[in-house]
Image (cartoon, rainbow, N blue to C red):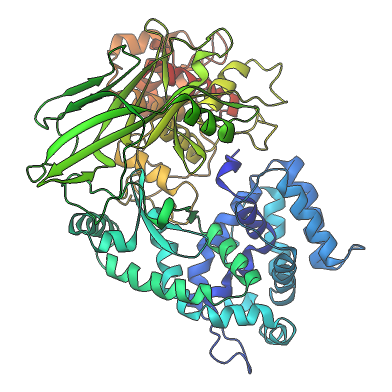
Length: 635
């Protein structure tokens, strides 16, 4: 079952009840008073999202999906006693129990869009799509021009001027939405519709990037890797047009626009003080992106100059915290003096932060640290916030009651705008430390995250599930249920691996024609392919929505261990020996024999029974998380 955390409420509502109406931003609205025309090219823009949305809902747990399908079917067929508003509010309330959203999708907007779906999508096509969703198998949900009731759509104009005005006002946003459809992975948009670009852990305004030659070069190179015809200037132009148009909308239609953006996977961004981005520092080059306006806070506890030609260790005198900085952590700079320092906030400041962050399942433990990487040249300081290579951070658990707080569930969190963002952490029992790798600097603290689910209380994988939930590698299908016996797709297991390894997303393309940039798993699959974790089922197909087989899972797990430098060697005699204990060894595919045998040798995966491995069986969510848990401890 796909992790529902990746789909906010607005995305779920749009994808299930309203997804077909996402053709709105692409309609030809130049002559709305007379008619509405829809071209094949416009449908080609939207159909990939429709396919993704339908697949999303087809894969929902039946206990959630079926009641909503029934309500939607009754609605589009007119078989309802509830008013339209009451019905759609009921659906929204059901979905809100699954997830929450930062975007406010008003009931009026939902009603307008649902009525549009009922009005201008032909009955046959509606029933066909709903039937595929209900069956759980998506074959073809793409719209053609024949699936649109043109006369009904034209009459819809008069009844819903609110939506029509939204379309007219947003004609000029199409350029940005088209970019988003293919290249959205690094874009962020704040509540005022200002567009930002994310590089590593740091989010920059487009102005910051345009005014910094180093950043601009980096972004243009990333864009070039995706598409030779795309550059930063195009995004800036589209973003300015988008922002102007969006700010002219009514409040309700601004909410609707946020929902559409969210459906395309655009992450909302809350700027730091003053609307700037991150620390505003340059990457690698030591050049400034303008005034950095960084004021160091807290009491220094560790500091050292950095020589890029060799490894540097920065540690406090009591060894409560240490940072291992690799050679070449940033690109060669322009002769700046480089210094890394760690400051600690006082108890009052830490308590203020804890009071804002602590919840029933999340607890701030110990001290709050500020990490700084400063480049100084000609008396001017620039703070570097992202790195070319990760810095290893180790924190002692001395002083933390590990009888009260399971140390395996303690991790490092980045503190950003009163939000705690997981940044990893592996417990070393012998050293009593937590270790993780950071690709950027900010404010950090150790936190304890203790999450459980009501349907795993007596399950064999309870400990593994809670352990990996504490590491933000897995979530439930609802806030309170995990569905341990549900299936796992190839894309879902890939996403588990990327979270496990804490690898920054890669932007280079893949050969897979069935992995589109609008898919929730695009970043995970693209990254995993580029670092060698996954292969396709054919040269150009990944089959992301196929349930993963046990032998496929074994192969991916072995590649994950290889990626972190672990020994996974196995000779042919060992392959024969480990496979011989299973009477179904002949069912193991020829390409997977070495991986399956190695998975047994290294205790990553054992047989389903003492005498069967079941290589072609599909994996449950519990089985997959048990494998991920073992990999986590082995890395």
